[in-house]
Amino acid sequence: MALDPVFAAQWLGSVGYYRLSGYWYPYRVLKGNQRGDSFEPGTSFTDVVALYEFDRKLRTLVHDGVERVEVMLRAQLNETVGAYGALAYLDRAHFRPTFDHASWLTTAQRRIDRSRRRNDAVRHHDEHYGGQLPIWVLSEVLDFADVSRLYEGLPARVQWEIAERLGVEIDLGALRKSQADRAKKNHPLVRWFEQLAIVRNTSAHHARLWNRSFTPVGTAAMRTIPELVNLPEGQSERLYGALCVMGLLLDAASPGTTWRGKVRDLVETSFMEIHARRVEEMGFPEMWRNDPFWSRRPQ
Image (cartoon, rainbow, N blue to C red):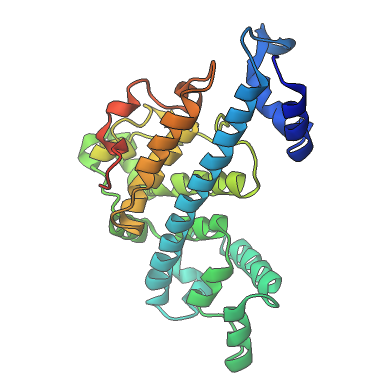
């Protein structure tokens, strides 16, 4: 690998060998199913740093997008569950029979205990009211994964009502009967929220994001939405699918948002210029720039 010793020493000192090694790994020569110790011709340490910097900026954009989606989902759950009462989340009758309500409440209590000393909303409630937290205070201390599980625990009819308020309008008539039946029982957003929670945690913990594989999520139902017609067929396990779903949800969370344009700009200006890297490694289809969904202008 070509490098300038002074430049390399500066980056190794500030980022670390182990973290940077994840970014030069794809440049190591592939021998069968394993990477060798030598690098592909033309590899430079500058390319490695550029890839690291792209991934860092990508994590920032993704974290920004997921945060707004998470806040929107919390608000919708507060409104929906709270309509039955401030403490309705304590009553398993409001959830589907298969939902592990007791386990979810145990996790929620851990989140409350964790935040009791440092969360102003929790302290205010304890000082002035006492007792169990109302749903709108509780949701402020839950992780995205907890909020996602609560959405999963709701009856299918309620899942669908929330999804449509989020701008996710699936055409069941465009699906095979088996696909439509599955979607009716459990809204496809359930699995997508699970994946977005993992993407969110990956970004929040500064882990490598750009070429990571996630738990596959089925795409058939979401592909009936005109804006998402270019989702991968069958299932999505790369970042591209998550970016698409986030981009759609952000239309509801932040009307007029330019987030999708920022993602496009970052990929075009910071990634596509890097030696030997391809957008397909993130799951982007070959003609993704022709998709109006990724227009620079707000939708």
